[in-house]
Length: 355
Ligand SMILES: Cc1cc2nc3c(=O)[nH]c(=O)nc-3n(C[C@H](O)[C@H](O)[C@H](O)COP(=O)(O)O)c2cc1C
Image 1 (cartoon, rainbow, N blue to C red):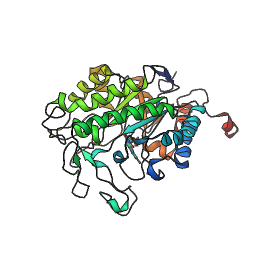
Image 2: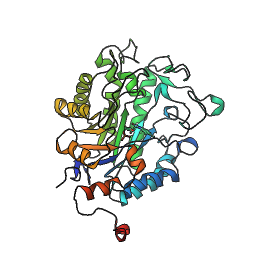
Image 3: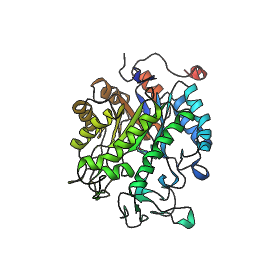
Image 4: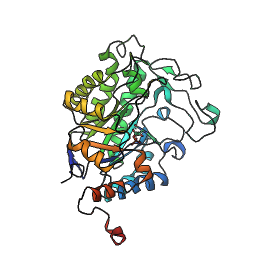
């Protein structure tokens, strides 16, 4: 019996296997962050492909929280309505739809990767003025943020909670809070980017406060039966930055706040980080958090081989394996992996004549 193809129950939801589509921006939303047919076909294909958990791209809880003007959002009932056929199709395939709720902070209002220009999008091209823990831009060509005051911070917490409630309305069965990659929550966590002197800065407890307030608010908004995941950057990979020891403490506090699984990524707060990229390079971070904090984890980052994914779960390094780029290259990876790991065929009935 394959560990990777063993169901995973989180609260009231059971994933049919341990393979998840990692959240990936598609930069293809319609006006005002509405998901489009692209999202329906793209996410739907990965559900047909057999991933047990389908996590949407970073989906903004407020318009100014989008990374690019082409990002999806979930800040109105119209967004919930536009997501509904997408979640319905994913659910009909036996996969579990989850939304990654996000706020891009000082990395908001940037060009999508295939645009000719880089950095901050000006107002004249549909950009906006971002917010952050302070008033310094991430990079010289990014837009200069406004520092959030306490009312602004309370608004962010409320926006995550409201979006989480709307996510259930939209048919999502689970929620992931995006607290990684140098976006707003990570900007508050990391000493590299949080230089505040109020109760949301200073020592680790102060820097963790916003993320934990968001986690508690989201848990309260979705009730007890809905899984809440949180993606963190387990290390900044920079001396003097956020560390894996900090992440072990954060993971414990997140679990106490009602978070069920820590999706363990890394980096993003500092452009100068030197990241030891290689096969499964973030798996030891997930294993460390799982072992030392006693919290279920997801492993992500250059996991591409079925045997590699199987080993991560079988060895107890993580409870869930998230695949990003490999699932862009091959939406059917989960079915192929199941065949390789000698599971009974998992292909949809519609495709059985192919074999
Ligand atoms: C096109 C693209 C878009 C991404 N967008 C997001 C995102 O919206 N949210 C997020 O947490 N990570 C995002 N990521 C990171 C992936 O979720 C994943 O962590 C990363 O690609 C490493 O996994 P991989 O080696 O399997 O691709 C993105 C990655 C790619 C390639």
